Image (cartoon, rainbow, N blue to C red; front, side):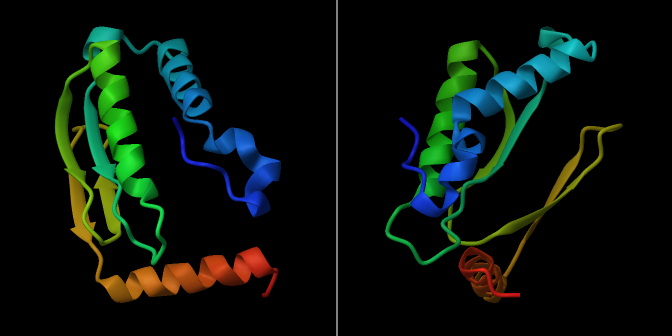
Length: 122
């Protein structure tokens, strides 16, 4: 079960629906000529980066692991959880991913920006 959508985001509820996101991604890849047997999954993120009681990152991490297992896909690499944000550098040509773990001060800046956006401040 996906976490509840906060009321302030009700107008974009569909974007929070994991079923919708995974179906769209899968269809787009296959529509563009991707072959199921050639797909490689590197799962990154899921950190608890904001001071909230709800640990959405952990729930998302478990969801993606369960989904990939049900679909018969292996996870080639993962960097999940903990309490920091990440910045990704991905090379589609080589498939290489580099992960830079960001200090918690960046988390606070992101949180403050999200709060001002939510409140309509500029």
